Amino acid sequence: MFADNTLTPREAVRLCALGTIAQGPLRYSDLASSIRHFITRLSGPSLDLMGSSIELLRYEGLVDAVDGLGMEDNALLQITEAGSEAFRNLMTAPLRPASDLSKLITALKFRFLHLLSRQDQMDQVDLLIDTSETGLNRLVDLRRHMDGEPGYMAAWLDDEIARAEQRLAWLEDLRTKVGA
Image 1: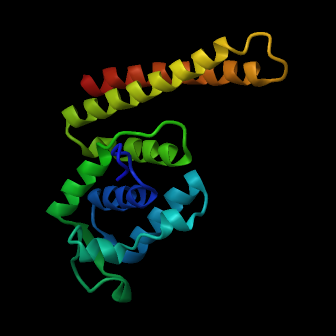
Image 2 (image 1 turned 60 degrees about the vertical axis):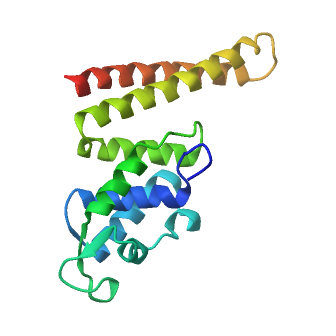
């Protein structure tokens, strides 16, 4: 992880793999296809993101082959206790604002949020709200300095601010639903 504890691209793939398999055992090929499909739809094809191997997860003891060896015989894989702990650590890592990787990790958090305890879910929604508020405050601050500037930056910022406010309202509603 980065010094600020946000996830690296490799760790984002690990989160996707562990979260996918935490939902139930999958064949090696199905897990690989699921990871590739999800990540490339959000961030496009990337060797940085796809370089992590499911075999490495097996070697590290995070997933286990239930009825075979691995890739060579398309084994059924399941998450281990160590894998569940690694999943939780990755899921609860902070976000780095305004990057494609951040968007991917945010999407992964929403995809697998239901797998966490209610308290961890609440904590993650609060983290997402804090991150969104920080981003919104940065946009508003920048917008204050755009009055009278030529070009389209002010209009773009107005649109981004409106989207950020809408996203924040949605997250506040989610906080209520998760806490209910």
